[in-house]
Image 1 (cartoon, one colour):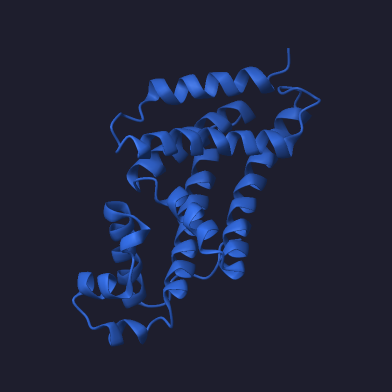
Image 2 (cartoon, rainbow, N blue to C red):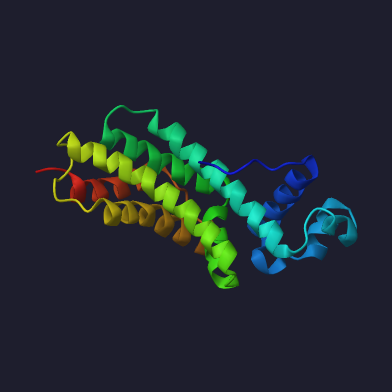
Length: 199
């Protein structure tokens, strides 16, 4: 279940400013001074809403959780069969990543590098909820005898997550230098499909 939404308009404005800074310049430029400058407020005014940069990152993780899981849930409603659901989720995930300039994976990686156990646990929880949603689709496909009966759903859900992460990572490293188009998404999905379908 998603956590409580952001509680104030100012906090939402701060999160939006944070996302723009990260998308444009990366986490290295994410400082209290930079955020305050973007919002045209003092650093002291910013600290009235958050005690530390970690509090801002925590709220950013909440935003990632809410938006990512909404995308997954909406995508699963677009198809009835398990294979169609996976295809829709993959396409929706990559479109979501493109729209946000890969922000979700940037936040995941930055949370790892910050070495804050609370933030890492919080991000791990978001990823696990995502993986569980994929596992549920895979379980359904196994029960309906569409997918291989010997699938390890945990590993197969991780492989699905890796499809998105790998494409978005290469896209980000290229400076967003190529289109995340249907052909690439379809090609990735066809490779994944070969591994899960019942022969």
